[in-house]
Image (cartoon, rainbow, N blue to C red; front, side, top):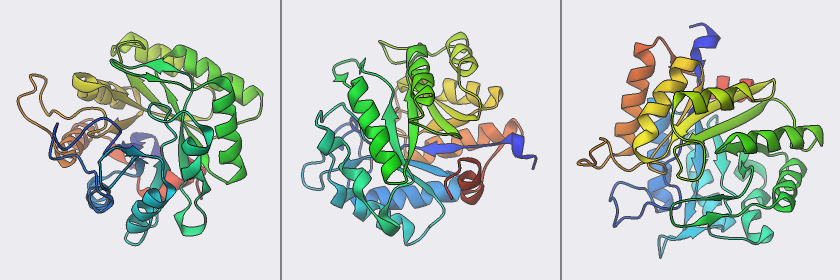
Length: 280
C-alpha cells in the first residue's frame, strides 16, 4: 500500500480517570496493560500511550518501577512497538515525580514521553504544566534520548510547540496528539481540527482523538483528513453515544480499523512507525 495511505494508530489503554468501578474493562494491573497492549498490536496499534497505576489502589502512579514492569512485559513479546510514558500534570506537580519514568535505561527506556503543551482545565480537575515544567521535561527527554509526544488541546498549545522549536528544545520529525472535545479547549468539530492541523509545523505527523462521545467522530475525521488515530479507554469508556454499552479496548480498535479500511487506509507496521517518527 502507498505509504501516504498508512497511518499511526496510537493506543491509549488506561489513562488516569477510568476505574474498575466505572468499567471492569479498563486495564489497571501491569499484566492487564501488557496483555491488552499486545492484543492491540495484533489489531494494528503501532504506538502505545502508557499510564501506570498503583497495583494495590488502582490510583495513577509516577513510579518508574511500575512502568518498567509494563515495558518489560511488552518488549519481551514485541520489541518494535513504540512505547510512550506519561508525564501528566493532572495528579502530580513535582518535576521529580513527573519525570521519574524518563529515567529508565536500556531495554526499559521508553521511546517517547508525553508532553502537554500548556496547562488546561478538565471537567473536574486542572492539569498544570508551567513553561518551566514543559522546558524541563523536554530537556530531560533530550538528555535521555526520548522523543516528546506533543499533546495539543487547542491552537495555543500548537503555538507553544512552535516556540519550543524556535528555542531548539524539540527536533523533527514532530509527533502530535490533537485532542478535541474537552470542555475548556478546542471543540470536536471539523473547523477546529482543520485549524489545528493547518498550524502544525513542517515535518509533523499527527493523530486526532476525541473526549467521550466525540472519540469516534474525531477519529473518523482524522482518517478522512489524512491523519492518524488516538484511541482507547483513556478517552472514552462507552461504545455507543447513548452510553448503554461499555466498550472494551478491542471493541474500539476493531471498529476504527474497520472504518480505516473502508476508507482505503491501513496502520503502519510498528517498524514502519519507528522509521517515520525517527525512533530507531
